[in-house]
Length: 181
Image 1 (cartoon, helix red, strand yellow):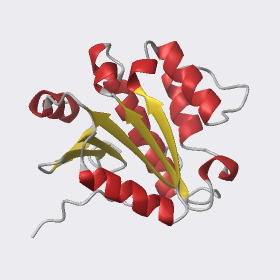
Image 2 (image 1 turned 30 degrees about the horizontal axis):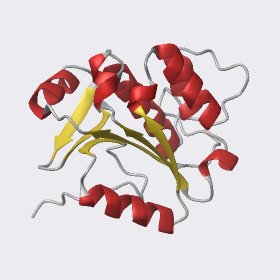
Image 3 (image 1 turned 45 degrees about the horizontal axis):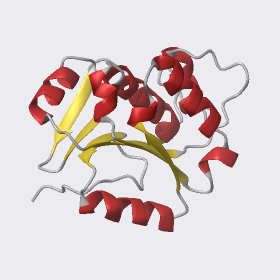
Image 4 (image 1 turned 30 degrees about the vertical axis):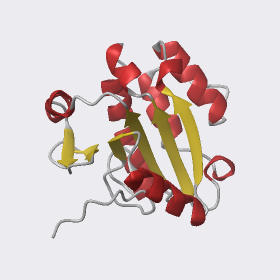
């Protein structure tokens, strides 16, 4: 029997989950993550009204360095290299409610790609070439809560990229495709 649980309390992919916000499985997984010492940082997708707003919100909430470049590549770098004072003793979960708002303005796809790159780097402690770094591994996941789910359209959109998509009845998991990375 396949495991359909949300695995945010370990270093294994998928590192990004798209899930309906009312899911009891999500509530259970977040509770377990917090019990293990994980830090949950909440964002609202409606607050990400533009790229600039998304970058500003992430930089402020996650204590990015002053030299953060406020672009997608810089976001991937900063998310993949969060300091222990931000991630806590166990790891960090970035939870975005109302993520369907990001879909409406074209921010969801690039954010998912960036979150997958950052999750790969943080969870595995590898650099862009797949070489181990001297950084400690950080349990890092992103949960995008959707109150309006268009699963089939969203899945097709994600599969067209260099991402590997797994599905259950309750969620879509996304990670970097081993064919490309």
